[in-house]
Amino acid sequence: MPKPQPPVQKNETITLTFEDLTHEGDGVGKVDGYPLFVPYGLPGEKAQVKVIKVKKNFGFGKLLEVEEESADRVTPPCNVYYQCGGCQLQHMSYSRQLTMKKNQVENVMKKIGHLEHVPVHDTLGMEDPWRYRNKIQIPVGEKENGELKTGFYQKRSHNIIDMDTCIIQDEANDGMVEVVRRIASDLGIEAYHEESHNGVLRHIMVRTGQKTGDIMVVLVTRTKKLPHQERLIEQIKEAYPNVKSIVHNVNKDKTNVILGEETNVIYGDEYIYDTIGDIRFMISAKSFYQVNPTQTKTLYDKALEYADLRGGETVVDAYCGIGTISLFLAEAAKKVYGVEVVSEAVYDAKKNARLNNIENAEFYVGEAEKIMPWWRKQGLRPDVIVVDPPRKGCDEVLLTSILEMEPERIVYVSCNPSTLARDLRILEDGGYETQEVQPVDQFPQTNHVECVTWLKKK
Image: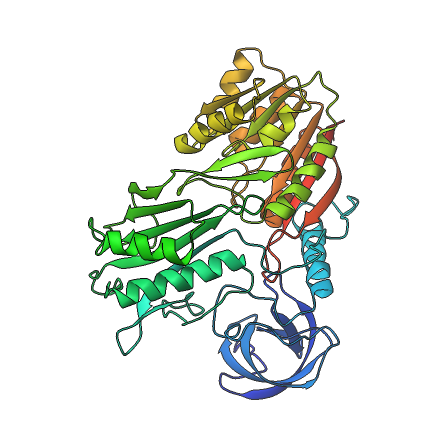
């Protein structure tokens, strides 16, 4: 019996009405029940679409022309939005972005976690969802005339889109990248060439302290020597007298990883500073630090509310990073134990604790899934466990350790709703009740959403 063929063919142009959005923000329309996923389509819109890929159960299309527009469609303020792969949702009103993110969380709670009964609150958004990023790391290329260009990669490629500004970046970051690009170009510093693995300047990274105004510039080169180093430093200082730190990082490897092993401060300080709430943080070139401190404060305030600390509790912070959440918890808890696999992050966490005169937080290097069972054998019985894992979610051994430690409350901070829902199901089956989920828009104009969730022991 012949297999049923999809109702559309590759390269065919069709009229499609969008009914929904994927978790990545693509429009979804159906032809005789066959779903087509189309970037930039919005629910309720009728559009001309070119079919570009046909699979057995679904296909992909390219938006050619919108015939009936949604009230949620807006004109993207970025002039390279449709070429650049950095943002996915600038064509969508901000209120719709927040609704989409809430719906995404609700869907995975239902389909993956089977937690239909758990309330998912409206997404906490920003008053001004632009210019929020305090860190930019941007590749360097060359124009046809030999001048340097900077820009993010085109979608699904390594072609650099030449751009003057990125409107989700702090303006100081933007201005500094442009200044460094111009100075390096005038001095004749060559861009790195990915295909041949030669050339010099690979990336320009800029970090800013949102509250302090501190600026750090990191120049990433393939070569151990930074050409025209002294003149480069002098001209950057002339253009931005308040620059606190200029760093040279050497990355000799043929890799997509941005920073190499060797880092040298060539002007100013090793660290810049910033604050979130009352906590001050030291930030080096390699420090992990939240890129949107405004929403990080919103996220952590909610995590603290869910932890419900009264002053006498022992808290474990798994995946503690540089101690960002741990130090907030320590202000309200009796004792906080943080664990993190990256030794440099733990080094920074200890320094940040000293910087804030916090003495009731201890930090350990290691995999949480190995350290926590060891703590349990030593008799540690935390009242609250906080987890903030990477996108892959919590390791199964870690979840087992959490269940065996039997804390009264678990606070789960997540950057991936799908793995959050999966892990909540395991914790529910192990004797905990998920109380509520609060999505937070940490990255406006993109399809990413953070969540903070709390569970209590049955």
